[in-house]
Length: 578
Image 1: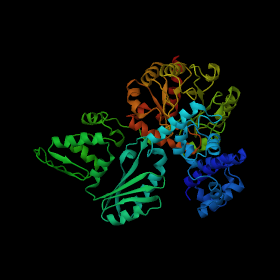
Image 2: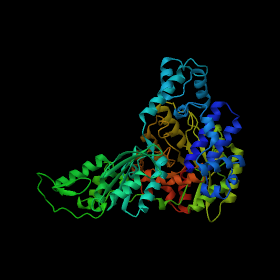
Image 3: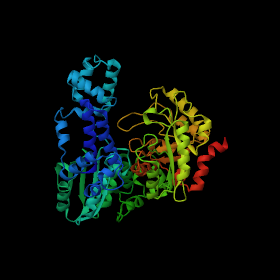
Image 4: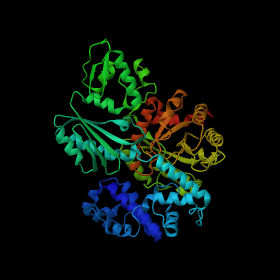
């Protein structure tokens, strides 16, 4: 069993135990074990083989034995017995925003509701509103959440499918009959949400590659199997298409299936102007058009753009949002790269709601080759995240200062709650004792747009607020952004010298890439932050870089590409100017 599958099963056990009304300590044991596996620094298989799983913080001996048995046998009897006590679809109710175990338990015991379809029907009939602890407002919110789920059915966060996609890519790359292979589509363009995965393969043995793909362990079912295209459903539920082409066709197929559709239309129109027809396989003479230039020789994807009088356009920019004009004028930016990052801010530890200690977060940062790391645990108002009060924060700052050394500089900060009226959760005296402050909204999401905008602008006007965290509060596919006038916030950030975060957590990717060209135009700097709650979370920086590239950002637009001395000055500049 894969680690992700085991994490899923442990989470399901915790939910089923909650539905049974079991001891909360027992529930928490399975939840903690799932989180511990998410944060593993070494392969699960090695820990099981060496009987060291119980050495992982959060996993006791009894659970270590169960998980080890699960890894070896692919079966966990306790889970099967527990699942047999409920209808198989009852866990789908946990997908509905606002429904927790307590409410789902009541729905099941009082109304025998175990599916989203039955839940929707009962909400509309008034049965749900009549339950103790529910009411009409709760029923209306459940219906709204159900509609949200329907709207986003078949969509996947890129970060949720990345590991599976890269694993399949690696296996195809290693196949002896594969000459070239790339992932195309919206995944290659670094869209935050994808509906499917597109693999392009060049080969002289298409049957062998197709057979390998269709029978791969990550494939759950085969939808269509043809000579050039095979469609399957992977174990995550996402559709995946394989297209096999010849070597000369590969650059064209890669460009075409990368898209976007609007970008491709612009490219094809430039080809027609030269008397060429461009499709997913080749350039050819366009019917009824005068051939103004000889058909070009194409060896790689970039040659297609050069033949059309354009600079090669990075995949992330292919959205028909000005990239054609910039490519024609030779003004495409040199986009920021993963290797440019020297450190990051907005990271959590076990002092608040993180799952990794300060020391282990520092060790993970060193392993990634970072020069500096900012620690920003929650402030006191975030009681659900075990936020720190002023005394606890001061003690943490002392630990951070003591742990910082020449191999990794640690910055002491906080993720300070922006309160409903725009004031901050800590006094200026407390904030001034820190190296930097990330100010974020974590409550009162239903304010009007005008009130939310005023709230945020008041907060970032404070000279001790270094950067604005996850500016719209969105959780992709789960929670819509709160209403806020982003252009006004960007203007205020420019006026006050406030950095805006690009939250790299793949569930957020906030600020959205579509706003970064405006922020860049106004001179607002970006900090790519993972919002890491574990050592593994630091690796989410890669998704942040993808979103930054999609937002046309360069190395000079991102403060955490700066070396230590320069970034220290950058995060102190606002309060120094004030």
